[in-house]
Image (cartoon, rainbow, N blue to C red; front, side, top):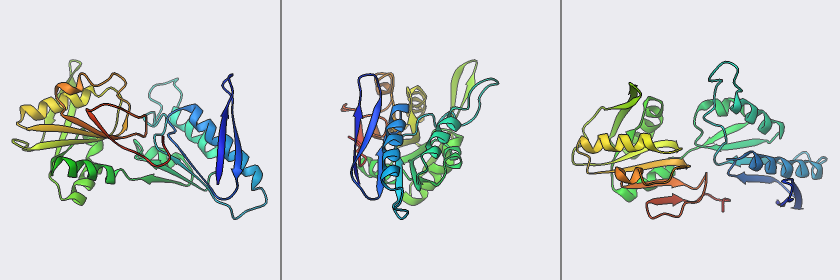
Length: 255
């Protein structure tokens, strides 16, 4: 199945089916506009396949917008992820694939959803570095990182961060002296937390510290990160990055 998206100067988007058949739409999904483009393509496809009940429609979202807003944080605030997932559900896809969601809440809220594992990308980074110690940056990431460590037969060091008088205080539970380390997490907004963690690892004797994140926003650039982190590995799920400091693993269907 092939389709095209037309964008008007007033911001409107429209879709046209060029070649009919099963549909598999692949989007970054990191903006409301991206989701609406998928909805336009699905609506056009539905109209073409109203009689063909055997046709299958699938959606892949590489970087789900709002995935960190997985609850109502404060009284009177909107539950943003729920609104986004309700919109996705309204498209009525037979299957929705989500790359490395921030929490299982996304999968619980999206009908017919399935997680795309980030393991192959971490494995590529692991092999390029050469058997580093894996580091989970916080308690929330420990379970996933532990599963990856078992698959790679790699050593794992947990870390945790608490704020003391507004400043981050990091504890590292393991020996990293004389060894390279690879921090693994799902996304990086600014990346300052990783800067402090890498600093703590080097104070403990790590010779080099690398960072892997699936969803690489890095909204404030890399200057601070370069102070303590030696190299970043990521996918281009959020955006394309052209910087020698970053190795990106390209995703199918994303330019």
